Image (tube, rainbow, N blue to C red):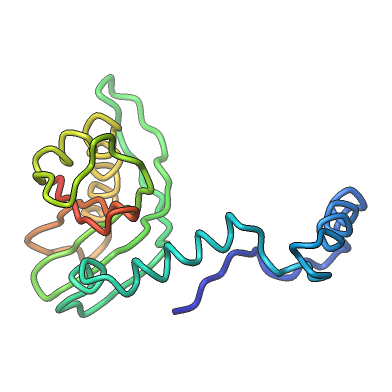
Length: 171
C-alpha cells in the first residue's frame, strides 16, 4: 500500500512562515532533528490505517473486485428539489467494481457511544443516518450512475468505520 500525505513538490520555495514552523518542529526532541519523523497523531493514524488494511473487513471490501479506485474525484451536474441546477463535487474514498455491481465506500473515524463488537448493524445504520452519511453516499451514487457507459445493476453505499473495522451497508 502506498500512502500519500502530501501535495507533491512545489515549484516555488515554501513561505518563510512555513519554513519557520518546520525549523521549530525539527528541533523538538521527539522529532530527533527530522522534518518527517512524525508526531504522535501521525503515528497513530498510520497504525490505524495499517490495522484497517490488515483487517478481515478490509479484505471483504475488495473481494471479487474487477476494479478498485481510491480517492476517486467526481463532478456531477444535479438538480435540487426546487429545480435549481448546481455542480456537486467530491472524492469517493473507495470505489469497488465487480462484474455485476459497484460498491461506494466512505471511511469514517467516528466514535460510536456505547460501541461493542456485537452491536447490531441496524444500530450502526441508525448512527450513520443521524450523521447524514446516507445523503452523502446518495450524492456519490447519483454521480456514478450518471457516468457514461454505466450499466451496473446495483450501486451500493457503505460506511467503513475505521475505529472498529466495521462495514455498515446504508443501501
